[in-house]
Length: 291
Length: 280
Ligand SMILES: Nc1ncnc2c1ncn2[C@@H]1O[C@H](COP(=O)(O)OP(=O)(O)OP(=O)(O)O)[C@@H](O)[C@H]1O
Ligand SMILES: [Mg+2]
Image 1 (cartoon, rainbow over the protein chains, first blue to last red):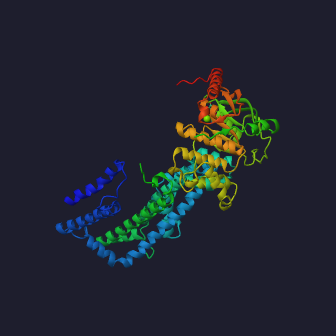
Image 2: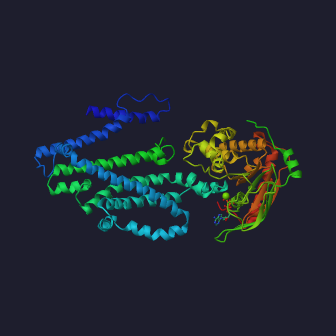
Image 3: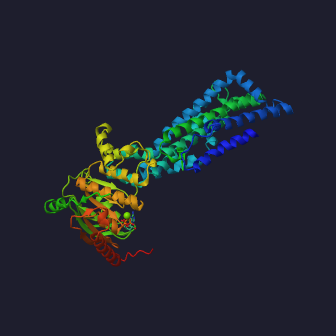
């Protein structure tokens, strides 16, 4: 309790500093803000796992209903031999799909904004593909595609593709008109305007598309694999998850789930980091407000 | 602070006698697609070394005229001539025009240096070859220490200076400014007015300066063109002949007051004639 009060004081002190016009002294001694920002969420997370563990052991919940975190960790360790290749397959599909979606989405967006006619011509297809739940065409893709993995890849690609496309189109269209005038004034070619103005100006939109697309690619890769449900050497985490359920190997199911979550978090962290890295110098979204 | 600026009167005087106009508008009309007639038979020519203010009520077509001169949007009829310049394929004088918009219009992802480099970059000049030229231009507007700053780190007045530096970096013959300081506070505006005058006096630039303000135009110009609205046309053309020293002293002088009164009367007459009375 006393500790918590101390911490409150430490947090309140900078406010007082801000208000004082006199030269600001060094931060009050105590836990620096940066450390706290890592420690607080991490501590909270550990507490939650501990609560889970206590709940399971105190109530003696059978492990085929809810395994304890220790059991899940054990399953992760023992079944690594089957889980790791599955993880690799899922990651490979997700990232290949995301990469293709980035190339395709950005490419098509640039093409679309070149001329109103191209946009009008392709618009219906974009809308139809966007409003159709892609998972619903997974069974069809499974028939058409040469193998399951290709079908999963196409599925994940289609799902990740549209947010990137629509964000990028939006970005390319929202360039400051005065800047476009300026480029025209200096006789910039179409290509120069694209490279030096339109693409940098739409970078924040691209980054938003990347973050959404990254998350969706993983989700689509998993959901499509549920639809496919095929076994074999090339199966991903979703299949291992289903398989564990059939066999009532709930700790392993949880282990697969943990791996999926970790992959999702990693993708989120990676895309957020890339976004921060490229926008940190100039865009409002990545700048700390100092007033 | 006294800048002790002299209007380059001799330059203007000899310019008038000898040189051909930098730009000449003849019967220029502009009708927008929605039917608005922004300009009708506007005729005006600007000689080398002049500092011309375009003054007029809001909506009288000042910006439209300036844009047409800059080649942004063709006139519906009439001609724009550049009697003393090489014309490129777009009908514009080669690198002879700089434009300062009402807003700074900087690229937020580029540093101050990158923003000023833009016009040269678009001409295919490698960065290293023009580095000195860019730094010189930045020094001209007093921003040499901010080359690596991003626009968001600058104040409104500093952003405007970057915009001016960008317009000057190509060493244009003609500088077009569309109410560049309208959004700034009085003190900053005063300072930038002096800076622009200094640049003008030093470099022999020709300036067309759009403004709402009688006082600003009277302080800066060697010639004031008053426009009337509906349709936009030249209403009065007031040359300020005497070689005036533009400084703090001038601002409080009787001459300045007289010029303001004359210009103000002309503007009033233009408003009455054009029916462009402002409510509010
Ligand atoms: N893109 C456009 N489409 C249609 N009408 C326009 C367009 N731009 C300007 N106008 C009209 O043309 C007239 C002149 O506009 P302009 O912007 O040149 O005025 P201005 O003198 O610069 O006014 P202000 O001092 O308020 O900036 C106005 O009546 C305006 O409504
Ligand atoms: Mg205007």
